[in-house]
Image (tube, rainbow, N blue to C red; front, top):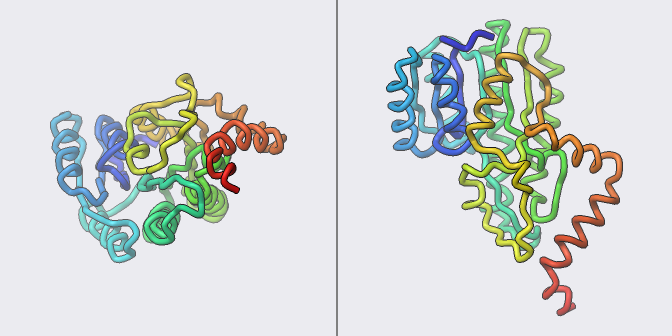
Length: 275
C-alpha cells in the first residue's frame, strides 16, 4: 500500500509505541488520526507532525477506549473528516503486573481487559463496516511476546494478549475476501515506553529482558509502517524471539522449570518460608 495520503487511525498515540508509530506515518505523508485520553500530548504531537512539512494531515480525537461511546465517536469523527479509514493500528493498552491474588479486581484485572481486549475488539468492529464498503483496509493489532509466552506476574496481561491473538487470527480469516488485511505484531521488551511506570511490580531478582533483545518505540513504529507496505499475518520483533517461542511451544516443561526456579521461587522466597 502506498502510505502517502492514506487515512491511518492510531490508538494510544499520546506516548510510547503509539506516539512513535503516528510520527512515522506523519513522515510518510499520511492523514493520521491521533487518539488517546491525554489531549495535550496529542495536540503537541499533531503540531510536530505538521512541522515536518511532509504534507501529512492530522486529526486529534480525545477518547477512552474502555467507553463504547468514545469509540463510536472516534470512527464518526474520522469519517466526517476524511471519508475513509485505510489503516487501523490498535495500540492502546497497559499492563498491571503482580501475583494474581494481589491484583485489584477492578483497577488491575477488569480495567486491563476493558482496554487491552474489549477496546481492540470494539474499535475494530466499528471500523470494519467502513473497510468492507471500501473493499480495502488493514487492521494492525499490537500484541506482545506475552501473547505467545506467558510468564509469572503476567497472568492478566498475557491473557489479554492471548485473546488479541485469537481475535486477530479469526478476524483475518473472516475479512480477507473483502481485501482487508489483519496483522499481529509481537514486540519484545521496549525501553522507551511508559509500560514499566504503570506495571507496578518491583522484582527482587532484577530479572529483565536481555539487552540484545530490547527495542525502542521507534523500532516498533518503523515495523508497523513496514507491515502496511508488506502485510503479513504475524511479525515477531526482533526475530530472535522465535527461538524462545518455539521452545515454549515444543518443550513447555523446560520453560516451566526455568520460570519457577529462576523467578517464582526466588521472588516469593519469604512467603514460602512462612508456609
